[in-house]
Length: 556
View 1 (cartoon, rainbow, N blue to C red):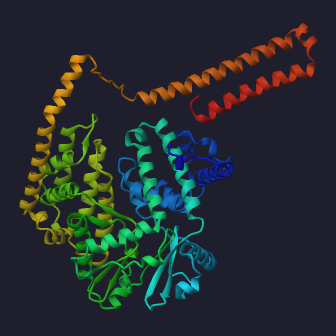
View 2 (cartoon, rainbow, N blue to C red):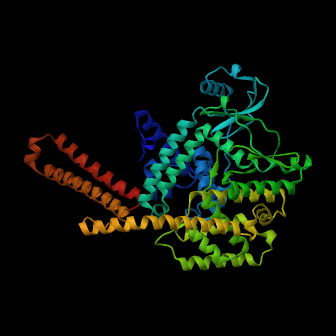
View 3 (cartoon, rainbow, N blue to C red):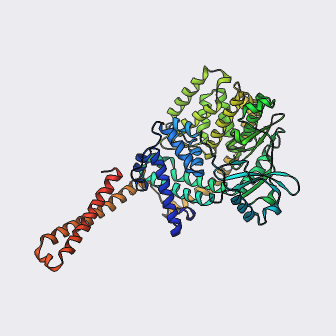
């Protein structure tokens, strides 16, 4: 475990960690998840006599409410899990996609202290005007409208005073839960729960540093510079720090406010096409895209101009991954099951559990369901989501960015269909990138050049690697390493069994010795009756405690 994620580095930190762990466990218990926590080995954190609330709701809805109540880390984690169909059933994933990151505002005086502490000057010297009323609020920060002394109107994003401490504690608990979960669950172990938690912690810590969001904003603006209808706010770097981000204030109507858009005379079909074009160009063209393009993060201006806000959740994609995703999308649109399956296998890492023949059959069945559906009725986001589900279900490991692309595609297409019920994502994709419509000459040429470079590197390294192998074989220093399948999991279980057996032997020794002492007149003569009773009492307490722990663990 890394130092920054190790619980209890100090006494105060350990106390905060335990208090928060109990709070998290209490929330999950109130929503009916106590049995699952017991099974995962986290039962000791659950408060006693915890009544289940909202029993009339199904489990997916209760999970969403629990995560929403627990704050920013839980909300972001739920959004990540919504792109992992190998970890959760479909009904849970559909529910988690409705998670909203919205909370009450915090006092203006707290915002003032954060701004002055971060930028090193009084608020009055920094801004000519600063609205005390927030324009928007989320779990990590809130936004205030302000005006610089140069006259420019800006949006100032201010981090909550306790955000860093809350996130740090929650990330510690998450990594601890992932480690325990891997110990007791083969599903979590095969899915790499600890690795997912560590990667999630990395991105959450980036979100706490608003300078990262500022750089993402600049990079996204550059990536979309070819689209004259797309706008990303300018960042005012002299007024930006780790906990404060100052950007250009942009006017517009939120993309999820259909009534106001219609009242303003906005062409909704054109606006939907522009939003989809921004996504396609970012993912397949520029290689940098907005990872959370929901209606609250997009403004629409007169002339159907698109403004992207809150660019902290942005992702870079390598050229190889872009080409792979373009080929997968082209095969999906052409309903070519064989090409689609080969592209998926080339994109991911095939494990020993992968049944390639079964994957071919499942992809063929999935595309057959879309054969009788009209082109305009096909939801590309849902189809891509089903493809990702098939891949993960067949134990093919794919890059983490693929999940982010799938999640953003679903959100984008849903927003576009909200604006235009007849929206056809295929048409926009084929117009934006011709290679998605069948003209794959450029894509094929790039792939051939890449493969030629790889073959050249391999040919250059092969003689050296063969020489090393033969030299080690001749000298007798060649070693062969063998790894037993799932050995670590079984060793952990053996370790737990050995510890419990050793403790049981100690308790048995206490019980036997106390029985001998109590039944022996000579032994009782050498110690007082009270001492004998205390010794027997300690033995009884240890024995009962061992029995209680075994019963509570659910493995009696």
